[in-house]
Image (cartoon, rainbow, N blue to C red):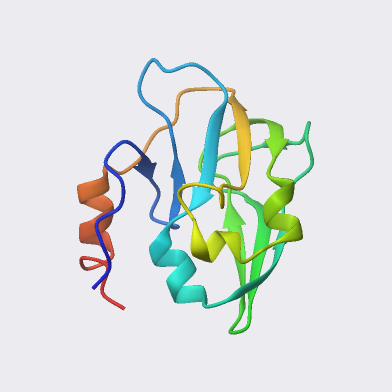
Length: 132
């Protein structure tokens, strides 16, 4: 069983996290959860949108490729990409080793307040307590 995800972040059912708090300023940082990284296995390729791309919440905006499979990355929010983490493109293993820190993926200037986000407790329950 994995550790509970950080309380200060919000989550999606597609296993992304954002550092959004109601009333917080833009941009928000986006990444994938430790649960998702563990399920994917060793990540060997990260494909991210470009700075300036406009994202729609729920749409595919990139991909993560591991030794096991390729998984789509879904935009957890609507907005404009303001920064991408070039470090994870160069060193994809950061997504596995530090998904909530150095393994973040992109920053987005919000077009609107996000909806349907899960708390850490709700996300932990969704993943059966981080069961593998």
